[in-house]
Length: 243
Image 1 (cartoon, rainbow, N blue to C red):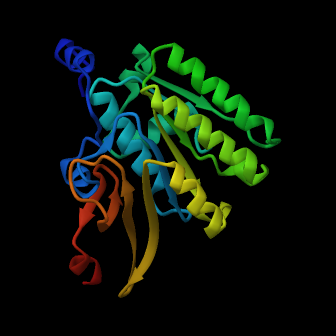
Image 2 (tube, rainbow, N blue to C red; image 1 turned 90 degrees about the vertical axis):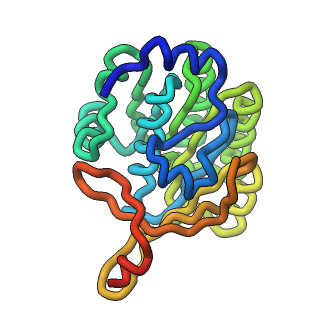
Image 3 (cartoon, helix red, strand yellow; image 1 turned 60 degrees about the vertical axis):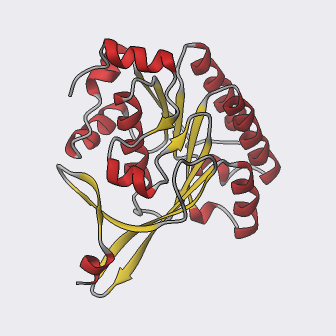
């Protein structure tokens, strides 16, 4: 892995239009990638691959020259680095030079104030020159917060995206009623839904590209994938999964 060089710096200054996963096959299934300035929701069941998808997008963003901040309730800095290294999407050098900032969130006593504190922290990251924000996962905060406050948080995120920031929120499906999910996704520019299905005698991870506003290619794809140590996310034909 190489750090962003002068060529990447020039690309950033000229303006990249897409947040890439760094994997052309996955990007193609996502309609080319997530347009810069989008508010994105990655939603799915436990162990469906949400965090790995977010990590893949973090890796791709960094390699395209973006400055990325991650607020995480899932990992410590050490465990995140170890997990991403095991998937061959190592970002340690980016962390060391400040292109990546990681903020573990304490949620044992989470309450409604944490969402407002999170928005304040995101604004500070924007002021520091960070361009892509990931929150993985926002679930522990949502489950102790009124729906009106959650909507207000997403509305605030939307305003920041209108200023050019790109924000990706990760949430577990069980934290949202179907009606409330519809309300949230209407605010978002992109919605990626992950799930695990039983196909034949094996469990297969599935990703539905429900919506990507402004995508350069057709969306609406449903794809199957697997996560392998040393490989990360890998798209597999459904026929192979059935086999």
